Length: 206
Image (cartoon, rainbow, N blue to C red; front, side):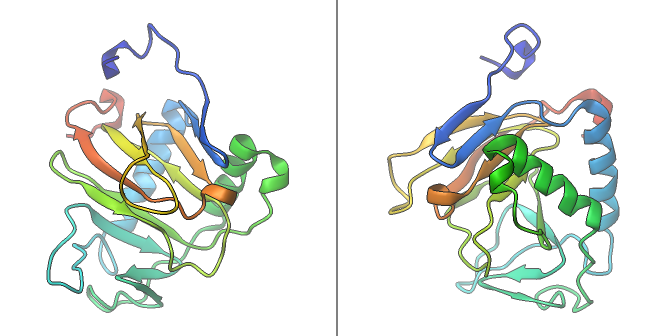
């Protein structure tokens, strides 16, 4: 089903694997716009949006800005050590509250016990991708909360043993929520494709 048919065929909440849940349209249009405006501010220097370079000399096609702690391959720091060296931007309380509400809605209130203090904001242009990887550098096993803004993408959610199959491809549209924790916390995941030009017009993205 192409993204333009969203209003004709309501999408259902789906458990992709035990502990991994996709909730379509979790953010309404106003909430998306407010979060996007915050992302634009966070992306400004200092410690703003940067290109991530891997230890092997390559670069990630998705650019990134961090809040609370600065992630770089493959550790965390208090400053943008692989960027301009500035202190990382603070993680706002309201974003932590949003994360807690997301976990409660996706996995149930009993799963929403962690206090969030780190966010990674990935910016994908039409040609960006993210290879299969696990979020393994955190000291917390709290569920991962993913919110999508802008263009529709294919989110590939795999297994905990290998980057290869079995995996499930999920279409994430602007406003969608994806949470994975528990048995799925260390599952491999990535973004093999972005559908350029599919963002809601009201967001003002090009």
